[in-house]
Image 1 (cartoon, rainbow, N blue to C red):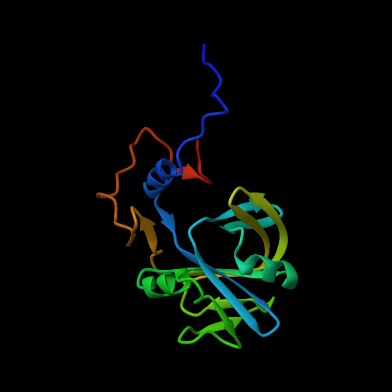
Image 2: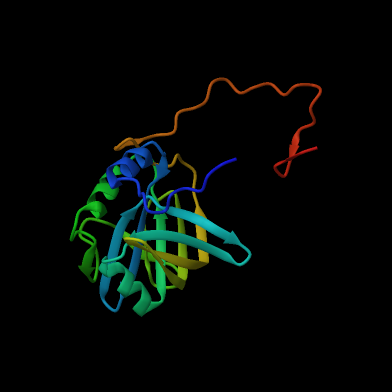
Length: 189
């Protein structure tokens, strides 16, 4: 028999941080526009949330001005970075660097459908209407409904153990066993 976890004992934030460092994540830049002001922030907590309806989610520190700007404008974009774009990640992770009037200095962007900035040269992008904002402890979770997306060839930029990485190929691909049918739509038959 298992006993319920004592709800009064919380793990120490440093322990949680250390454990989270062991999770490899992709790196993306979240952007929005409110009038002439642009907002951007490097994030690693981006996921596709639902296919029907199409939804994505991204977590941002709850005191970030980007949240109020996205709520005001009703739009956001996520640009997933590729290997070689570490400079963009570092730039938008720097406090104050992700806020500009008119355009970002030294960072090329464009707009697609909503008017939220999309970073040029990124691996994948999602241009979204803001669906909702949920509380998430010391973060807010922005839920976006993509209205336009695109993907290009390349390798994603990864973050693991406090450093940037490129995906490493696995060992030689395995040869299918003759007694197993090929995978179809992710389901073994």
